Amino acid sequence: MTAVRAVLLDRDGTLVEDVPYNGDPALVRPMPGAAEALALLRSRGVPAAVVTNQSGIARGLVSWDDLGRVHARIDELLGPLNAWAICPHGPDDGCACRKPAPGLVLDAARRLGVSPAECVVIGDIGSDLGAARAAGARGILVPTPVTLPEEVRAAPVVAPDLLTAVRTALDGALDGAPAAAPGTAPGVPVPVSVPADGRTAARAGARTTARAGARTTARATVRPTVRRPS
Image: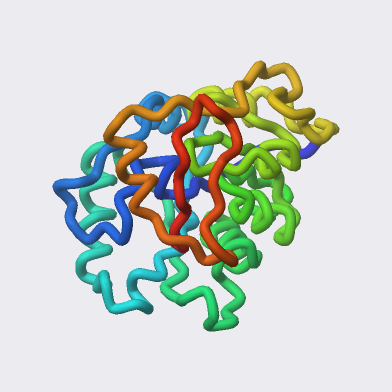
């Protein structure tokens, strides 16, 4: 069993609410359980880093200064993160860092002084877990209204919220975990569909997709959403 020595978090939709191409610190809102999850990691002496695609920079929608102010606000609300690994490229730039490529995970692990195999990546969409897989790290999916049913089915471990995901990582429940069956996770009962309040649904609906055409979830309990490229 490989000990978990670091947890790497997706930003938008995992650590904080997803505000499309956000450059305004006033719009930062932590996700439910984020503060408790980070407090638990600190109590265990496990560092946490953020691994995030931010194509708004490449698109000219967000500046590095804007991003810095947003991240300073996250640190203010949740306490300082140990590292930030950021991909500023667009989906067609062919970089090695944009998730699901492994670059961000490898960079964060290097900066934290651990191996990728000692890291757990927690995110809300398939590209987060794809980056973990490509880097040799483990992954946990925390579904939101924009998570596709096939991404839930393909996830090795699914958790209902960030705090549960962190507890799962720290308790060693990832080792040898099989791929989750539809709507289930090893030892963690999780609904495939995630109810969205009006604010979350509105923000999710503002996303544009990087994939061919708009893709929506098929579950009746989740409002149709369109995913933007982060």
